[in-house]
Image (cartoon, rainbow over all chains, first blue to last red; front, side):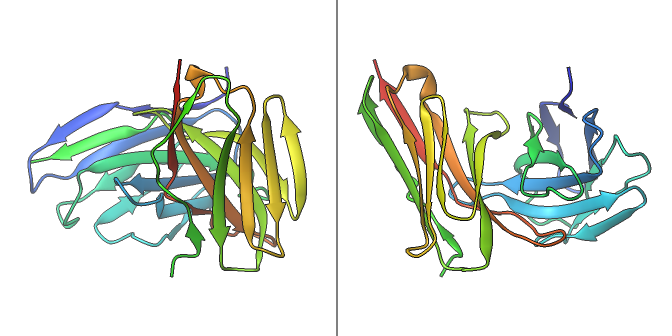
Length: 113
Length: 112
């Protein structure tokens, strides 16, 4: 089955630690995205990548970093510089010319204490 | 003012009712209008998208876009308890890469 996987489903970290969230897709999509979802707020774009070895900052990139070394993979690192890292993180992908048609993974709930 | 406004609800309806979910927007450049369904603690699932104005139907779901009023709707006929979820509207401009702007979602509960 084609789809997007994110792991782990739940992640707990202590304040001051960096943490990397995994995202893999086998939809053969060129574009991949990371969003953050908080209660009472819409999805907010963190980073996106339209092609391998290239990525751009979204609306709330501060305190996050990404890499895109393979078409299938787009890991997100939440660094200790992110002031409010506790959130639900969603990865999505789309065709390069159809960014309106995004398909989401199941999400990772990150809790930092 | 947000580009996309969506009432967060919650909206409670009895099973079998027709549900109407709505969003308004302010940016006339939006050309693609999407509806996502999100179950609790899951990722959003794309239900359908519409380009420009008009209606689109898929089973019990109908999406409507009125660009003159900057208003979009999702209708669910014969609602089922399994339709209980949060429904997100989303919008996108055309031309090259454009980011998607999401509403905050409306929480729907269908009561058996």
